[in-house]
View 1 (tube, helix red, strand yellow):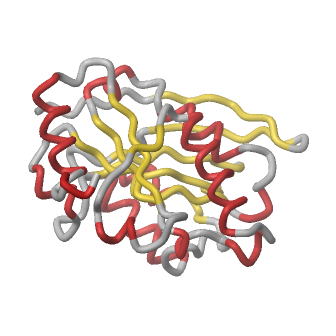
View 2: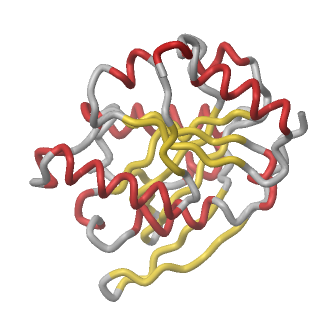
Length: 210
Protein backbone atom coordinates (compact mmCIF):
# COMPACT_ATOMS: atom_id res chain seq x y z
CA UNK A 1 0.00 0.00 0.00
CA UNK A 2 1.23 3.49 -0.83
CA UNK A 3 0.75 5.81 2.13
CA UNK A 4 -0.19 9.16 0.67
CA UNK A 5 0.34 12.19 2.88
CA UNK A 6 -0.95 15.62 1.90
CA UNK A 7 0.22 18.53 4.04
CA UNK A 8 -2.43 20.86 5.47
CA UNK A 9 -2.24 23.89 7.73
CA UNK A 10 -4.96 25.85 9.46
CA UNK A 11 -5.03 28.69 11.96
CA UNK A 12 -6.80 28.30 15.29
CA UNK A 13 -7.78 31.19 17.56
CA UNK A 14 -7.52 30.39 21.29
CA UNK A 15 -7.87 33.03 23.99
CA UNK A 16 -6.59 35.79 21.74
CA UNK A 17 -3.65 33.72 20.46
CA UNK A 18 -3.32 32.47 16.92
CA UNK A 19 -2.16 28.87 16.90
CA UNK A 20 -1.24 26.85 13.83
CA UNK A 21 -2.43 23.31 13.18
CA UNK A 22 -0.32 21.54 10.59
CA UNK A 23 0.63 18.13 9.31
CA UNK A 24 1.46 15.49 8.58
CA UNK A 25 4.86 16.76 9.74
CA UNK A 26 8.23 15.33 8.79
CA UNK A 27 10.74 14.32 11.42
CA UNK A 28 12.89 17.30 10.42
CA UNK A 29 10.01 19.73 10.97
CA UNK A 30 9.37 18.33 14.45
CA UNK A 31 13.08 18.49 15.27
CA UNK A 32 13.16 22.19 14.36
CA UNK A 33 10.30 23.07 16.72
CA UNK A 34 10.56 23.50 20.47
CA UNK A 35 8.50 21.03 22.49
CA UNK A 36 6.25 22.24 25.31
CA UNK A 37 7.56 21.20 28.72
CA UNK A 38 4.03 20.31 29.83
CA UNK A 39 3.70 17.45 27.36
CA UNK A 40 4.54 14.73 29.88
CA UNK A 41 1.64 12.26 29.68
CA UNK A 42 3.66 9.49 28.05
CA UNK A 43 7.35 10.32 28.51
CA UNK A 44 9.61 13.19 29.43
CA UNK A 45 9.18 15.95 26.81
CA UNK A 46 12.59 15.45 25.19
CA UNK A 47 11.99 11.69 24.94
CA UNK A 48 8.50 12.13 23.51
CA UNK A 49 9.82 14.57 20.91
CA UNK A 50 12.31 11.91 19.77
CA UNK A 51 9.51 9.35 19.61
CA UNK A 52 7.40 11.65 17.44
CA UNK A 53 10.31 12.23 15.06
CA UNK A 54 10.64 8.46 14.69
CA UNK A 55 6.93 8.01 13.95
CA UNK A 56 6.87 10.89 11.48
CA UNK A 57 9.59 9.28 9.38
CA UNK A 58 7.80 5.91 9.13
CA UNK A 59 6.07 5.31 5.75
CA UNK A 60 2.67 5.04 7.43
CA UNK A 61 3.37 7.37 10.36
CA UNK A 62 1.45 10.62 10.64
CA UNK A 63 2.00 13.42 13.16
CA UNK A 64 -0.32 16.41 13.20
CA UNK A 65 0.51 19.15 15.67
CA UNK A 66 -0.63 22.43 17.16
CA UNK A 67 2.03 25.13 17.18
CA UNK A 68 2.21 28.27 19.32
CA UNK A 69 4.87 30.45 17.68
CA UNK A 70 7.78 27.97 17.47
CA UNK A 71 6.58 25.48 20.09
CA UNK A 72 4.55 22.29 19.69
CA UNK A 73 1.84 22.48 22.36
CA UNK A 74 -0.20 19.51 21.21
CA UNK A 75 -0.09 16.60 18.79
CA UNK A 76 -1.84 13.47 17.59
CA UNK A 77 -0.12 10.38 16.21
CA UNK A 78 -1.25 7.77 13.69
CA UNK A 79 0.87 4.65 13.24
CA UNK A 80 0.57 0.90 12.80
CA UNK A 81 -0.54 -0.91 15.98
CA UNK A 82 2.15 -2.17 18.33
CA UNK A 83 3.32 -5.64 17.24
CA UNK A 84 2.46 -6.95 20.72
CA UNK A 85 -1.18 -5.86 20.43
CA UNK A 86 -4.01 -7.96 19.03
CA UNK A 87 -4.64 -5.41 16.29
CA UNK A 88 -1.26 -6.08 14.69
CA UNK A 89 -2.17 -9.75 14.25
CA UNK A 90 -4.57 -8.79 11.45
CA UNK A 91 -1.54 -7.77 9.34
CA UNK A 92 -3.62 -5.11 7.60
CA UNK A 93 -1.65 -2.41 5.80
CA UNK A 94 -4.63 -0.03 6.02
CA UNK A 95 -5.19 -0.31 9.79
CA UNK A 96 -3.75 2.63 11.73
CA UNK A 97 -3.89 3.34 15.43
CA UNK A 98 -4.43 6.78 16.86
CA UNK A 99 -1.65 6.08 19.27
CA UNK A 100 -1.61 9.29 21.30
CA UNK A 101 -3.23 12.68 21.54
CA UNK A 102 -1.87 15.20 24.02
CA UNK A 103 -2.47 18.89 24.61
CA UNK A 104 -0.46 20.97 27.10
CA UNK A 105 -2.59 21.69 30.16
CA UNK A 106 -2.74 25.48 29.76
CA UNK A 107 -4.34 25.05 26.31
CA UNK A 108 -7.06 22.64 27.40
CA UNK A 109 -10.67 23.69 27.74
CA UNK A 110 -10.68 25.41 24.34
CA UNK A 111 -11.43 22.23 22.37
CA UNK A 112 -7.93 22.22 20.88
CA UNK A 113 -7.86 18.42 20.88
CA UNK A 114 -11.25 18.24 19.19
CA UNK A 115 -10.19 20.70 16.51
CA UNK A 116 -6.94 18.81 15.97
CA UNK A 117 -8.82 15.56 15.33
CA UNK A 118 -11.16 17.29 12.90
CA UNK A 119 -8.12 18.74 11.15
CA UNK A 120 -6.46 15.32 10.98
CA UNK A 121 -9.24 14.00 8.76
CA UNK A 122 -8.90 16.69 6.08
CA UNK A 123 -6.51 14.50 4.06
CA UNK A 124 -8.56 12.43 1.61
CA UNK A 125 -6.10 9.55 2.09
CA UNK A 126 -7.68 8.90 5.49
CA UNK A 127 -10.65 7.40 3.63
CA UNK A 128 -8.42 4.43 2.75
CA UNK A 129 -7.86 3.45 6.39
CA UNK A 130 -9.52 1.85 9.36
CA UNK A 131 -8.40 3.99 12.29
CA UNK A 132 -8.65 2.73 15.83
CA UNK A 133 -8.07 4.26 19.23
CA UNK A 134 -7.78 2.05 22.30
CA UNK A 135 -8.88 4.13 25.26
CA UNK A 136 -7.59 3.02 28.68
CA UNK A 137 -8.62 4.97 31.75
CA UNK A 138 -5.11 4.71 33.26
CA UNK A 139 -3.82 6.92 30.43
CA UNK A 140 -6.27 9.71 31.26
CA UNK A 141 -5.26 12.82 33.17
CA UNK A 142 -7.90 12.37 35.85
CA UNK A 143 -5.91 14.21 38.52
CA UNK A 144 -5.50 17.51 36.68
CA UNK A 145 -8.93 17.39 35.03
CA UNK A 146 -10.83 16.92 38.29
CA UNK A 147 -13.26 14.67 36.43
CA UNK A 148 -14.52 11.25 37.42
CA UNK A 149 -13.60 8.28 35.24
CA UNK A 150 -17.04 8.31 33.63
CA UNK A 151 -17.11 12.05 32.98
CA UNK A 152 -13.63 11.84 31.45
CA UNK A 153 -14.81 8.93 29.30
CA UNK A 154 -17.63 11.12 27.96
CA UNK A 155 -15.15 13.90 27.15
CA UNK A 156 -12.87 11.45 25.32
CA UNK A 157 -15.77 9.97 23.35
CA UNK A 158 -16.99 13.41 22.24
CA UNK A 159 -13.47 14.35 21.15
CA UNK A 160 -13.01 11.11 19.21
CA UNK A 161 -16.44 11.54 17.63
CA UNK A 162 -15.22 14.85 16.20
CA UNK A 163 -12.64 12.87 14.23
CA UNK A 164 -15.29 10.41 13.07
CA UNK A 165 -14.34 7.66 15.53
CA UNK A 166 -17.23 5.73 17.05
CA UNK A 167 -17.47 3.19 19.86
CA UNK A 168 -17.26 -0.45 18.78
CA UNK A 169 -17.50 -3.57 20.91
CA UNK A 170 -14.56 -5.95 21.28
CA UNK A 171 -13.53 -8.90 23.42
CA UNK A 172 -9.93 -7.67 23.62
CA UNK A 173 -8.90 -8.65 27.17
CA UNK A 174 -6.97 -5.46 27.95
CA UNK A 175 -9.92 -3.26 27.00
CA UNK A 176 -12.30 -5.57 28.86
CA UNK A 177 -10.40 -5.23 32.16
CA UNK A 178 -12.42 -2.12 33.05
CA UNK A 179 -15.84 -0.94 31.76
CA UNK A 180 -14.54 2.60 31.20
CA UNK A 181 -12.03 1.38 28.64
CA UNK A 182 -13.25 1.33 25.06
CA UNK A 183 -12.39 0.83 21.41
CA UNK A 184 -13.09 3.76 19.09
CA UNK A 185 -13.06 3.20 15.32
CA UNK A 186 -13.30 5.22 12.11
CA UNK A 187 -13.98 3.31 8.89
CA UNK A 188 -12.79 5.16 5.80
CA UNK A 189 -15.27 5.42 2.96
CA UNK A 190 -13.03 3.41 0.60
CA UNK A 191 -12.40 0.49 2.97
CA UNK A 192 -13.62 -2.71 1.30
CA UNK A 193 -15.82 -5.49 2.65
CA UNK A 194 -12.93 -7.95 2.90
CA UNK A 195 -10.94 -5.61 5.12
CA UNK A 196 -14.00 -4.98 7.28
CA UNK A 197 -14.46 -8.72 7.72
CA UNK A 198 -10.80 -9.15 8.69
CA UNK A 199 -11.10 -6.31 11.19
CA UNK A 200 -14.30 -7.73 12.70
CA UNK A 201 -12.61 -11.10 13.14
CA UNK A 202 -9.82 -9.28 14.98
CA UNK A 203 -12.24 -7.41 17.23
CA UNK A 204 -13.80 -10.69 18.32
CA UNK A 205 -11.81 -13.85 18.80
CA UNK A 206 -14.34 -15.37 21.23
CA UNK A 207 -17.62 -14.65 19.48
CA UNK A 208 -19.53 -17.15 21.61
CA UNK A 209 -19.25 -14.64 24.44
CA UNK A 210 -21.43 -12.07 22.59
